[in-house]
Image 1 (cartoon, one colour):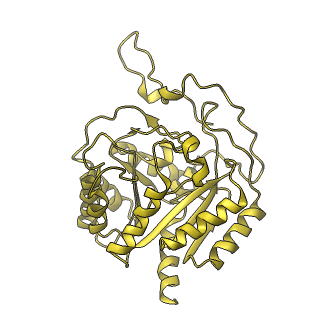
Image 2 (cartoon, one colour):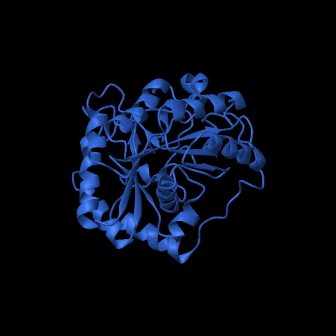
Length: 322
């Protein structure tokens, strides 16, 4: 389980105090962290491949959502030299109830970051890379131009690498989404995260229909871009609500749906309502495929960028047979 205080925030000078990772959650009552069932548990990463990926990421001063969000798949992915880079810093301006990323006022944008990521992609010999970011409501364009700069830097450094982006919602940032779409990433991902009824509790800074419209806008501006979105289950949603969100996604032309189990980062975060069984995930996958998604990934450990490189090849193959 992730800790509420991040040791990397400790200042070197004597007498300095740790900065809380989630200051807005400090006064919230604790909620019980349920014991994970056998199908959720993963081993701590120890492989040489994991260590090599970690060294590249840290040596270049890069941030990954793998570490910041305490992803349970980090050992498996990093062993294969697959990492999801998180741009625009490690501090988010939102305070979603499910998320382990640090919250607060972010620092200035690192203008050298695109070049660093381009070099890391080349050094890791990635055939497919996933780029995500924190929310940057403090920036006039929400970080849209920085996404473009990163995409262009990767293409310059490694032209054969395909690029998947997982963006924030660019809420109230006029023209920002269009700027990123115009950069033509191979996959444009934005997660709806949960059903509309739970937004105020789980994702209070976002708006369900705005997020849905963002993905619809991608298809309108560039029909060739693959669109992707994901939800977490186990937060108190009903099966009927999951069915409805699938229909909403298909109406917006979304190609790829991911469904994974919500895992509670700390006692201060939203509680797990229940652990959804592997059989239920299989049923969701079957239903989603019948609704017309090109690709569906639904399992307890599914995350947005889990097996993203293999899934991109599957997306391309699925489109060819349509």
